[in-house]
Length: 71
Image 1 (cartoon, rainbow, N blue to C red):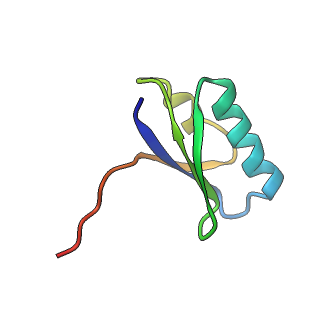
Image 2: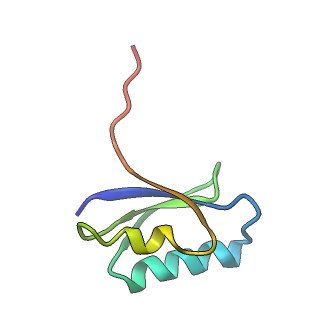
């Protein structure tokens, strides 16, 4: 399953972030990591299922997790 980084809206409360996580799990996702610097988390989702999470009212952005390199 691909992994995605989910960023919640900047004004989302901790309960609203939890609601987004609960929604992800209810749709077959598996939470990987909760981020402290941003209001967000990583989630593994079955292929093609992440679009439902992008529509959640407290979610700002969803992007596929990928390796980043510096020179």
